[in-house]
Amino acid sequence: MQLNNVTLGIAEWRDLIRRVEIGEVREPLVNIDDSDAAPWDAIFVGGGAAGRFGAAYLKAMGGRPLVVDRWPFLGGSCPHQACVPHHLFSEAARELDYMRWNSGTLWFPKFDDSTASILDLISLFRSGRAAAHAFMNWQTKEQLGVEYVLNAEATVIDCHTVNVADGSYTARNLVLATGAQTAHPRIPGIRKRGVFDFASLIEDLDYEPTKCVIVGGSKVAMEYGSFFQATGCQTTILSRSPLMRGTSLHHVDEDLRIFVVSGMRARGLTVHEDSATLEILGDEHVEGVRARLADGAEIVLDTDFVLLATGELPATAELVRTLGIELDEHGFVEVDTQMRTSVAGVYAVGDLIGSPLEMFKARKCGMTAARNIMGEPYTLDLSQYPDFLHTTYEVTWVGLTEQEAREKYGEIIVIQMPPNGLDQPIPLPLAEGSMLYAFTRPEITGYQKAVFDARSRRLVGAHHVGFGAKDAFQYLDHLIKRGITIDELGEMNELFLNPEHFIQLSRLRAGQHALHDL
Ligand code: FAD
Ligand code: KPC
Ligand code: COM
Image (cartoon, rainbow, N blue to C red; front, side, top):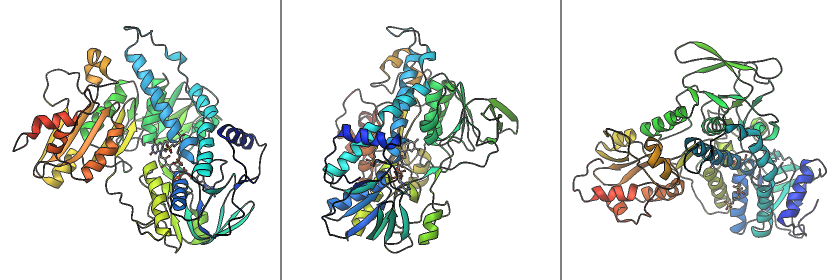
């Protein structure tokens, strides 16, 4: 279906995507300007965050990109199965937590979790996600002027050629951007009905789970587990390593970790760290999970719902076979800091190249590939970035942990809230999202810590559990890279009451010639 000469509005895109999804439209959705004889500078294989942003950047620089995606929309897994549902679930988890803690007080009704349904929220997401899909297609075509073929599987033939249902395309360069999927562990019984990963959960769940076991300790495990538990679905996490201390998360401060994990337990989640999942039990449908705990004891957990959250891997077999590209030791495509693979003219971007599996990285590697293809050398620096996850809290961090900073700088100072050594819990930190708790349950308002190199007086790490500070960490990351000091922080202007109290707490110490902890 050639769409280049027509302008589809959001409603028309939604309808077209729906027609593809119900099987009414099967052909590729082609947005290519046939009158343009210019060669393609790059074909982006996959139009998720990495491919779409790479193509948009390359186009903005005056190049001609083509994006191919097997789904009938651009944007990839983010609006379809990943970030957007995750944020919907995490917001629900937070709301439910709030309703539960405040149940029967002030104007809050007695909380009844029988009305909180996992299936309802997934159905709500599924029926609404096409709005984001439609916008991605509209923005990419009408505003960004990027050409694409959707609803079309791409097969890479060689380093210049990609076959798509409606023909073959050649370009100066290829940018591989095909993403990653849940790596299914080898556990007997894993194919039973009732065992999901983040993608099949969205696509296939058709019953209300009554109990849940999560295999794995990733961000997805913590985020989805917190949501399931908040709906009243008794949830157990079986994690091979301590949560937030596995290989996938970096720079997690131990005090922050303890606040987060004990907060999950306080809300009724069972977390078995250092455990092994041995078998998924049941006839056709899952009925239980057998596991070995840290102390060696074996247990059987009754459940009708298992979520696999053991991390992700890309599908690379075909790319290795046709192109001979090299993989790293974890199975991701090996690239240099300019996103070049081992094959000349072939770039790889996004989840396909491995950690961190995050949007900023996916989009920025797309941009990096585009700039290098267009002859403007650019290297992607991933040595420091801000990170976050949700439980019923928002958890954010950037830079070094207290321990890492002590090892690196020797002399450091720590400013934290609440401070150490209090004889009873205080309602701090305190800001929007925790004001009611301050007067009812001061111990759950949050936790935060800033770490400074005592000699240079520079901020080297910031850590936060609470609400509303995620945005600040995007900018704190930048300020840390620019070397912001405790003195400069003290000169900033807080919007009191502020979610993270770093500015005013810095001001309480900045007058000291020799800095002390607070
Ligand atoms: P994808 O978005 O997966 O895009 C790959 C594209 O390639 C797809 O559209 C696919 O259809 C297409 N494709 C694959 N093979 C072919 C083929 N042969 N032919 C044609 N097309 C093909 N990150 C954040 O920063 N914030 C979050 O809140 C967040 N939440 C997340 C929640 C969950 C549950 C998960 C799983 C991940 C989350 N992430 C989050 C990570 C984020 O979703 C990914 O890092 C990001 O989507 C990766 O983008 P990508 O373009 O590399 O891959
Ligand atoms: C949630 C959704 O619709 C994805 S849209 C991304 C919007 S933006 O980052 O402003 O380009
Ligand atoms: C956002 C998808 S949901 S993309 O990164 O804008 O393509």
